[in-house]
Length: 393
Image (cartoon, rainbow, N blue to C red):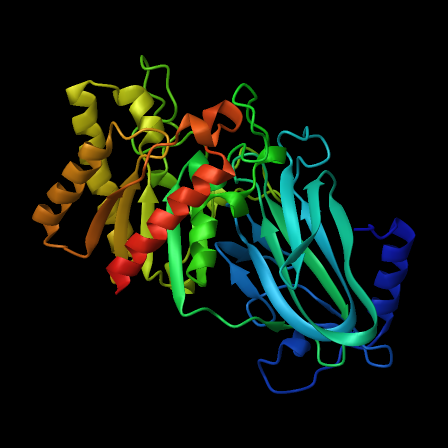
């Protein structure tokens, strides 16, 4: 989509600042959060819980809605003639290479109309324009993962009499906890000899997002490429203990950079924002590169897995938990089963299940660094959908 020029943005800002802030009344009415030009119907919002539905883990700042993990974003609906959205890059956006910039999609009524790498402090996108007012649903989704870059959704400007409203919450909420497979690592680059790039990550083509869509569920992703329970991806000799998901499960995310001077790993996630009906844990692929066939390492993985399940349960007392593994190899799956059994025996918690994914096969191809193709992700999703239906009845 066409980006607004700097002069146009400046003129819009001056006009909006000059107009009086007005409210339609009603206390929590989202319109009260906007700056309005009543005569033209232009309304500008900073996204928050009163005017958008948050997708995944997000954090409200004074000038933006902060996004870190894959799939995080916001969704809203309005009736009007025009919409534009400003995306704010993190502190490293202008200097980062395309392999490390955030990739963002914006959807209009389910169709992707913007797919961009965020390479500057602010980029504004025209999302919709029409001569006549139309009903529109717009969603902003962070396609790439948290480690390399975070972003903020800044001003949302619409020409509309009634302004924007959050879309309805779904009846089902699923949380996914995983690694590069959950992030959609390399799914847009079906060459196994190519390597990591945020430009070829797309969480919407990965099994987790596909599962949420198939079940008409809201979702949240807690996933970082290369991370595990006890070790990140390893050469098999040295444990990569600084690349572990459990320390970040109670955080907004993890990133090597900052956003407005803030770190997502320094920002606690409040579990009161939503309650998952089911939590899918898919961790062990990277641990397997370290544990290999060493019994003592597998036992360490088992013990730490039990501790992680305890952390998940502490924060989600009523959620069902499904522990999975296998898309990029299933050698550790018996240890996952062992960990779940040990956890149940220690705690008496039986609201927990296991499922082994079918390992990827050559006939379905391989994406960058031998990761799953979208074909493989689709097959994994289909199996997971059936298991979740079985668990939830």
